[in-house]
Length: 236
Image 1: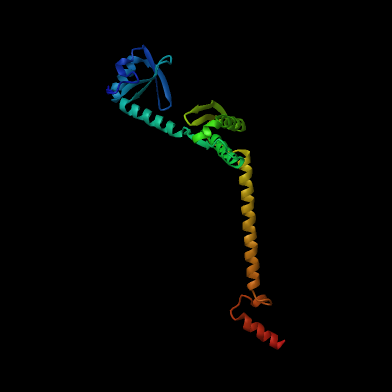
Image 2: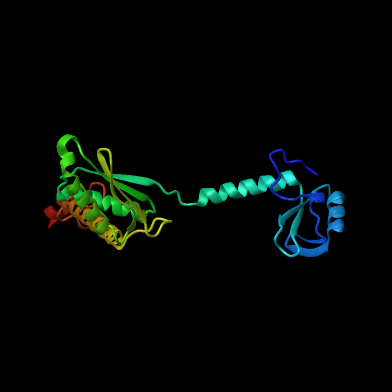
């Protein structure tokens, strides 16, 4: 039996004191007496590790305990890496933010929430502008209302020092999902790009045609074609 100096998370070998266990591995499963399972572990030079104590009978594996712990740690690390990382994005306002600036920040907040991030919006009161704290609260409430489809309010506007905060969390946290508005915009941009490329191709073709001799015909791309044409004209 291999000792786990950090404290065992699983029962191993003689610590397993039930009458029988289910051994799993390599796509196989069998229920045998625990004593027989311990003998098998000794013969193979591995440990009997209980991986599901609440099953009936408990499920065990025949594996080196150190190797088993390494596999569990690696699997946990991989699962953590696959999880969507949620960040808190900040949006800052002044107590008298104009509509243009407001709409610009509203657009970014929608994108943040669609990507599964939280949004912390706040109004910063500088100097005597603290007198407009009610105006700042109205602005944040308007902000929350305009984002109703994208996020939910975690904390209503509250004043902390010279800042009034509003916290929003995404309604659908997880993998980033593009809005229909963004999809339509990307479609228009792709169509515009395709039209520009088509126009560029046509312009290049017209320029090439202009550079060719007016009566070049078959001799347009032949070396000395101009001389041949002149001779033919004289004979004509």
